[in-house]
Length: 495
Image (cartoon, rainbow, N blue to C red; front, side, top):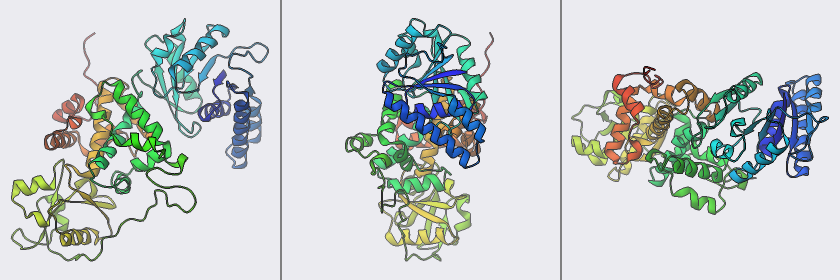
């Protein structure tokens, strides 16, 4: 296929590299000719590196290099007047800029040329509405870096004609990436799903439950994420993340579960973007530790301190009877808080602490403390929980603790995506796993805990906090009540 890529920045050059490596002829264009020259040199360099590392043959690299053509203008016809079969736009994320580009392309290219926009957040339908023939336009959303990120969202607009999404889906699949068809909704699928993690991480930070580094450690060690939420935002750029959070929240008319924090705006205004500004939640550059900050150590505790528990989940750490005086009391908190347990069961507030049940089978145990907890109780509880080699994170008491709240938000947002019909349940899990690098898809993740238990968690969070952000979706409520997997499709209706 002959493909024209318009936009020679990071995304455009990545798309061009992907396409020529898959055997397509690629015309690369940009409003700035010097950007095209730089991009062509970059792609050639990446192809040469692939040969050096044995990932590509010399003959295949030479063919790909020869198939990359530089254009003087996005509106040129190259190759003896041959027109591209597909144009992929990767220019500034601005609706007017994109629409004007396609209007100009529509004037010079035949009706048979399909248009695709790589927008990550703008409405495909609204871009297409500016064209004389909106049926020829669809979204084709790649992820950076394009050659390595195997997911591509195929987004039909409301007016996209039949056959265009199928053509794009086939192209992506035949070229080695995984297409997922998603509805034209704010954030599409992956950017929408990603709000579950980052909005809840900011909520935890806003409430001073733990610092950003502690939240990242818990996300990595308890939930199994490759990067904690604040480490991830430093990598992608907080300016980008904050914009997507606001776009998705505004697009869904301020849905409570997507509510962003007030914290990002000031950090963006201060230029604390992350790695690209050398300072974000962590400091980067020469001599800086980045996310590899040393963990605070709590020493001096007694690992032999008597412990009693209020739940079977913590039986392995219990060493004392219910009647033992001055024993630590460890309570499992599933959607509830230590303070609530103290009040409900008459427990000694100064030596009662919470343990997140989600953390028990992981390398890191999470201990929750209240304003009434004595310092010696904290030290001894850390020593008790660490005596078999576990790391221990100490956080302030909150309903559900850190990992539960992050997971609850991830799963609840994903079930909202499913009930809106943005994509099929199985495709949601595939897209999020590939696009966000989660250890499993959010619906499968919820099922690994159990749909009924996830429902109980969200109901407990909603009850104790009073915050509507934790209201379980109808999708999750139905499946949890019926004890069905969260991936169960919608009920079939008679035609």
